[in-house]
Amino acid sequence: MPEGLKDPEGNWFAIHSGTLGFMVNVDALDCAPVPTSWEDLLKPEYQGMVGYLDPASAFVGYVGAVAVNLAILAEKPAKPTLVMVHHHPFISGIDHMDSQPLINPNAFAEVISKHAQVERVLCGHLHRSVQARFANTLAISCPGVSHQVSLDLTRNGPSRFQLEPPGYLLHQWSKANGMITHQGLIDHYPGSFPFYDANGLID
Image: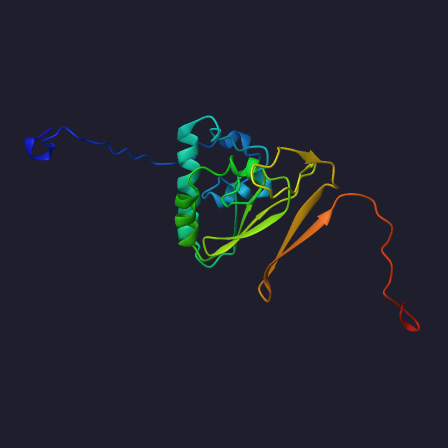
């Protein structure tokens, strides 16, 4: 390395750059066109045909997935977007769950806050529906489908769960109303029943 580029105390760092691309087996496409974008890979004709390094076990796969998502956010600033992570990036008040949050939520918030098209940040992990303001948008955890974490907001409360009804979130977007989120329970209940009959409101 040229002397003029060396730190007198021997400090240094390396920059790595790479190009992400598609390798396509055209014989396996079964007459489908060759994909030319990441969004193409979401089309139904490619279902079950896409392979990728597992971001949970291969760092190259993780970095690639992050880079692609950042690029798509930057390219489509007007497209309403949901961003999904597993661990919650906010403080829920349930202490034993808050000891296992999203790692480095401030860095995540810095990214999200730059993209006004992010309508929701969705997460799981809490096994309870919790909403919080986060990075200029709304963060929501989805209720669990197996059990719910006990709603205990006492300091250093015990790690417990209970068998409340499983639930889900349904997100509906329209140009007129934006993003609306509904919560439903997964079970069989009596109903539905009318509010009105031929005589008006039923009391």
